[in-house]
Length: 629
Image (cartoon, rainbow, N blue to C red; front, side):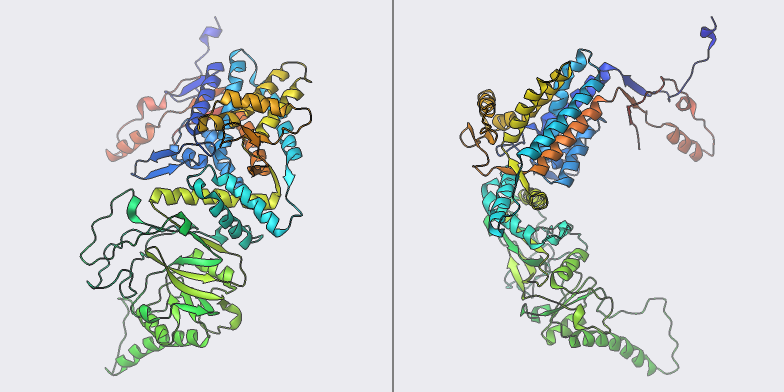
């Protein structure tokens, strides 16, 4: 009777949704499996692409796991974990983003029957972590080091790693061409950890709308070209020039006499600049008279404006004699001429500034055979400084030779329908720029993402210097090893480690499915080959070309060991995290804030109403919390 008189304890707001127990865990596993199914078909050289259309009308075509996961905008709190591990894999090693999502989804899929049969999730977590540790140790044991090789041998090995990464991308048809380019770019920056030292920039070769030129002017005549928009931001490191044939949106019709596109070539017209390249900046009258090519020039880098500055509107000057006004005007001109004269006396033949270089300065430099460019982005200016050995100056006073940069050759070149300033043969040499050519916007976007993955892989392979066989070979070997190890364990853990080993086979199975092969037949051949007691079958994986099996090492299908180690580790942790959750609490959207706002608008009248009452169960440990931010 006393227990019936106890008051009700209200912990959670009215409308709070709580789910707990086995059904909730199964629901989280199903959500993660659904996410894995989305990217499943993108794995491998024969993987399909996804076309994602967002609410802003932007279209993205990609088979990169991290890009797809980011654009899906997943709201399920448990499934978001897979998005996080894909981003982590992309940040850490650059490749294997689809692999890590697939593995996590498969681990959970194998755990689902045990959960439904009443096995406690902590038993599964304990066994999965043990299996993960054994798998990572086996990867390290099977890895082959590329240390001690000559530079030429190392370049070939790294190119094979890059080609393996690029084989599953849109530009896989030209993987050898781009793989060697990526290796040269990474070796050019040496031990520098800054990825932005490998030059990238994002710019499209669209129509130069609003550019008025003479009716008879030829396209991209120096007198006519004014296509740069200084208000636009360029945040990437690969320079892209493409033709207008595949734009996802039709540009507005150009005005009469406007400058049209020049076709931009194909992928093989892409090239590597051993130095810095960036798009021609906005230019004033007099620019066409400046020389466009120098050998061994001195380079002056500035962070100041070189143009006449008028007085502010509220400035007041009292004159007793009208003739004194001329002296004020002369003082303004003398200040700018003094700055320009000091730049010329420094001996520099190329002057770059992050701020504007006006028409007076442009003409002044042109008369003295000096090239100048204003409004150069901060990133490009820093890359020129790193490559040429110069230092960015905030004043033109006391410019000494030590702050000037240099390079073997500076020239302004036409690439497609864009003009590029190219600094090559830089003494510091710790920067490189890849200029991409191609067709549609979406294709260039995906090519840039593909090269980013390849660059990251080559950098990781250089630092960690161990590689393993790709094509599902390492996954099958780990699976065989774990199955053997499970037989030495008594108890239920044997079943859990066996299920972990089975989950690892998802990689070669999916490679077969995506290529249209009989996965069961190929996996049986792989199991038989890997079971050989001599161990000679360890490097055998799926042969995408024939539909059989082949030695992945002999076929140069390699990947850095760090990619597989990171993928196994991240996927296991994600699966364990999902398995450890037994309750999800979802807070309702706050109505009280809207009520208070409405009450304030009505002169302070109103009340919160039912939004302040609540009922619900107490919270348990290990729960997800999802609500409005």
